[in-house]
Amino acid sequence: MKFSKGLLQMKHIDNIPSTPGKFKMEKSPYIHRLRWHSSLAKLTLWSFVFLGLIYFFFYRSPSSFSPRPTDLSRRSLRTNFYGGPAWEKQVRSSARVRSRNGISVLVTGAAGFVGTHVSAALKRRGDGVLGLDSFNDYYDPSLKRARQALLERSGIYIVDGDINDVSLLKKLFDIVAFTHVMHLAAQAGVRYALENPSSYVHSNIAGLVSVLEVCKSVNPQPSIVWASSSSVYGLNTKVPFSERDRTDQPASLYAATKKAGEEIAHTYNHIYGLSLTGLRFFTVYGPWGRPDMAYFFFTRDILKGKSITIFEAANHGTVARDFTYIDDIVKGCLAALDTAEKSTGSGGKKKGPAQLRVYNLGNTSPVPVSDLVSILERLLKVKAKRLIMKLPRNGDVQFTHANISLAKRELGYKPTTDLQTGLKKFVRWYLSYYGNGKRSVQ
Image 1 (cartoon, rainbow, N blue to C red):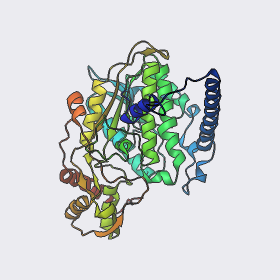
Image 2 (cartoon, rainbow, N blue to C red; image 1 turned 30 degrees about the vertical axis):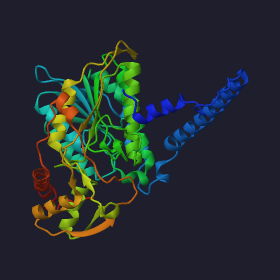
Image 3 (cartoon, rainbow, N blue to C red; image 1 turned 45 degrees about the vertical axis):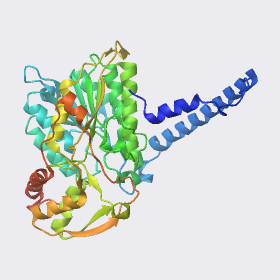
Image 4 (cartoon, rainbow, N blue to C red; image 1 turned 180 degrees about the vertical axis):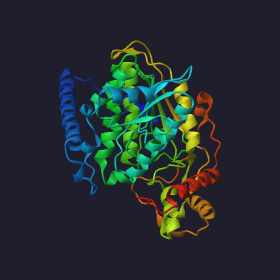
């Protein structure tokens, strides 16, 4: 991986004398010993800080951070609840490849928005697909269960379990020699991190490490495609965002965990030879979407006659997003899987250089949030009650804009759905799913 400009600048600064142009006294061994002891003290201090953070996030109860009843332990069903011939038969049947050149994919977060669509697309073309999902209550679990039912009708089985359950992951790999892993399980959302920060560390960092630990140990190692995020660009003001741009200024804890994920991926690629591809999604929307996304809850509140909050930046600046339709994202995910090279490790040991990639998957056409509301008004035939407020400092950024030239060149990625068309499909699904009054959006 290339070093960021910031890191390179730091490296150059280290090589510049503290008083340029002046006589520099030769350092004595005593000075070297002093600096060595100082460095050792700093290392010890930071080690204790790091261990303290681990204790803080992993051993303290999440309930101390959040008013929601989010006990992480109940999200994980341990492996001893599984097993037996019938269960293993379900797993094998779901993961069985039914096309000549098909692949066998473990999809984590399979009952999530992107996970459902990717799983269905893989199954349609004859690939073997096994899902894994914890069905947590970050948003309405009944929507996730409805997606699960949709996939089950296509012959896709979703194991109800947590990605941090290493014993379960190992058991699944014992049953099926997956060629690929599509790792989409994550704690999503920017603002929820203010309520429950530990859930982001649990899912996005510890969960990723759990998946990679199992993948590096199995033989053969699978190729891994995983969901990063456009949020890693953080406070970057250069647009459109390119994979070469700096990503060291996260604006939210969510962004920081996704950035950490990219560094963790680099580590496992370098040490263990895992083939890893990170996909930076840009504001994905569409049918079966997430209720915590603006387009979703705007639709709900407009239909209920409630006011909707539209943020504006300083000096009445426009807040815009690079909205990307789910079908375009799915095409990018499948292309990443199809072009993923094999991992090069065996038994936890690297045998040679392995593929490491990161791609933007966006639409390249940022749209002001106010325009999104106008489109929804026309589609719903209801006037929105707009409440304009200043953009809060809670992790949201003013704009996102993807440069997709790398994905276009290497994956053949080419988004084709504009916002008007995509929202029309979403609204049609929303009215069909919620319009009969039997369901409520939680």
